[in-house]
Image 1 (cartoon, rainbow, N blue to C red):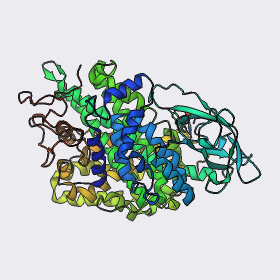
Image 2 (image 1 turned 60 degrees about the vertical axis):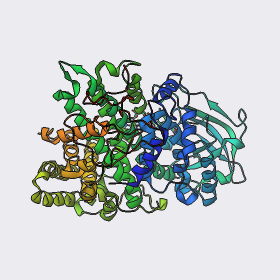
Image 3 (image 1 turned 90 degrees about the vertical axis):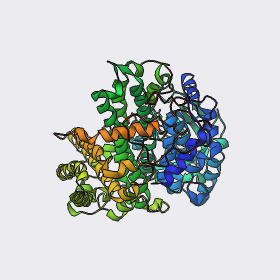
Image 4 (image 1 turned 180 degrees about the vertical axis):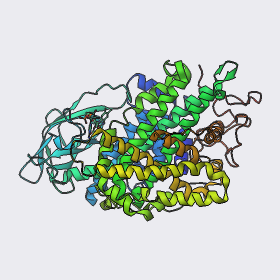
Length: 631
Ligand SMILES: Cc1cc2nc3c(=O)[nH]c(=O)nc-3n(C[C@H](O)[C@H](O)[C@H](O)COP(=O)(O)OP(=O)(O)OC[C@H]3O[C@@H](n4cnc5c(N)ncnc54)[C@H](O)[C@@H]3O)c2cc1C
């Protein structure tokens, strides 16, 4: 099945060339070198801008290429898969601008679009030295200047691109008492201020991950900010930020997916080549289990991220749920995948410059920030606890936007432009994605009655449905929690997230398995090859008994190996990577990639046939791909 978001992402991927070629636009060697020197990846960002990456941060109505969030998610996944520092350092401009897309005026949005198009970095400045998640505690003060504008004083700290950027969306206390109506987002333009007099930049703060990023801050001292800088009406800052964060939290999934893609590829490459006890590591049952479980977790994340990104358009007023689940589950899921793969890699995960030049360790370090910023793990679970009342009631009544959820599941549905005014702080009727779970399970039940090969996936689907009923009952007991959230309620929110991911996976499979059963990823969709292990893994993570069904995984693992050997991203839908596969690189016993997978190399790839992962001529005697990450 050919799907536009993957096609656009593939276009960028192919243009960026072979990351193992130091002469290409975005090579791993350069990423590692800049990371070592803690230097901003400016040359790589310039290459991305020549393709027009920044256009994807600008909604189409203002002349950009942001037509739908699913495409942006896949595009940023490709960038993150190569280097998270670049994805976060460059993608930050979307976060910087998003408050204007949500609440700004038409003229403000058009001016901002021009700046972003010309490559001006934009920051989002919420955090202060003394206040992180507690947005209502912010001390940066905007005092009225008597002519409708403000004089800004105070420090925003730990701000991505605060020094390099020219524009900042600053959450400002505009009423001395603060409170929900006491803050305003001001779009501050440093170019109109005098450095040293109105503001000074806080020096770069050294970090363990994304070392090259400009994580700094800015201290204002009576900086004049005109009335026209207010994004939305005075006092609406908190609401604007909370709505904007629903979009950015959904998009953070691209960072976690890209990191997981990269980590999985490095680990598989090692397992394919490492020989011990007279066999290759990939042939040992435990290693196979780790790789297959990781593969299932990556696809579970991809299914959820896809549905959530599409639901930005199709079920906008329920994004408060999908965004919180996604921002909780994708980063923690990838952290767990990386932890398991670390054990598989053994010493190679610890050594610098040996396997994959030590890139695995950079992926690990870099990714840790994704679960911390833009609302950390607990903040997102807390956001779900705050909605337990409506979510439990919606489940009991079967309400929620099920039609919107169905449009999110069905990949043939064209997405309408986002209407930001439909964003809501609470999903009042519950979650439509969750409400479809009973009908998705019923559809699978019906299908499995005709096709016994689907019975494997049906088992965990039924169990997920039972778990959903139980979890909603537990949620109901915490429906009145305000303020201090007990640890048990956080755990209920965690389990709710896993069940919602299952509902997303089932909905996606139910609506697309017929069209999905054609093209280069056909083998994953036929016989629910991806769905069974994904649902089984969700049950494992839910802590259910008698899970880890061994039969669910072997075919998935062989697809992972075949896709990797064929130069494809391991994903639900086709995305060709930088170079074409050479004949004979598919691991012995792996299913042959469907027709069309071995397309010719295009922009940025070698013109002569090479092993996808070796850069050497095909060696028909090897029978398996030899990784090119030289040791
Ligand atoms: C590399 C990097 C880049 C960043 N970029 C930006 C940026 O561009 N713009 C920006 O505004 N900020 C940015 N930040 C700041 C980041 O968003 C905050 O650090 C984040 O909100 C978490 O806050 P905190 O951990 O610093 O402190 P706090 O939020 O005060 O958290 C302290 C502890 O309290 C816990 N906690 C928080 N909320 C709850 C809750 N509801 N229930 C229970 N426990 C809770 C946390 O888990 C944590 O353990 C960045 C941070 C880093 C490290």
